[in-house]
Picture (cartoon, rainbow, N blue to C red):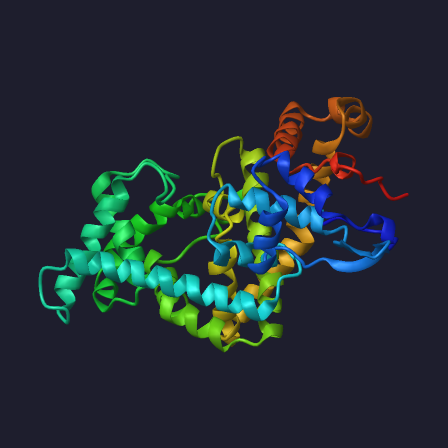
Length: 382
């Protein structure tokens, strides 16, 4: 987010924010900003001066970044609950208690949508587990055929296998008892569906793969920790402090795993080399906070799993994030600056040269230019 030197001259007027928003969405007006303020998506202005008898209301300078982020997120969703959680997740000043309500409302809505779809397709009695499982399979078949707004396609997968993978995933999310009977048979289909089956073959530097053991073991843990009922209980029972801790952990873990995926692809020269490409898709999705934060809360409630999470967190901070920052820094440089920084690159083996170039390319979209100059009427702080 933007920083300020604390001067009142840095504060922003409504007209400046409207002009900034107009670069992305020309329909935004002062009334639009007011509506977003009432939704808790932008901060309220403060009285910072007076012209004659007319008070002057201005916003803190960080509002520019929050507005940019809001406009970006709105390209994917208009749901205020999702937007509120996404902005909070990114570190903007959204009331944590209100975010808790937003996450809870979203998860309950998702639960209700699933149940309504199952009710439409369930032919047997409502309390018949087999009839419910058949309804889950029917919904999975619809989702498996979707080409957009559905499960990502990270592997080539036969339709029946994809359907089985989605059915088991839905069943575990809904805490369906019949899904557990299909765990051993269909867990490999779920791994292939979300792309992590590559993790069984990924051996960086000759080390063993990060994913081993029976596929059903990991999904059995997810069934315990990641059902919608469990996630709802975790969010609704968490204090503001615990929610904020989970947010920090979730952002670092999700961003770190996505970075690890990019680094792996650059070093291996192929897509989804590590099996983590699905996290890259999820990391840039405004819905990330609505699932990752409750899931981290759930994991932290288990001593053993919290310890495992801590080990992953430490590895990401010490090994992955430093490489990510170096790659982003190189990607943001001009070609001349990059050549000067990598002046010894031609002396490296050709394979290493290619890896470094691929690494810079992987993070080129993450490079963040200084946007201060683009803000109408604002002079960069010294």
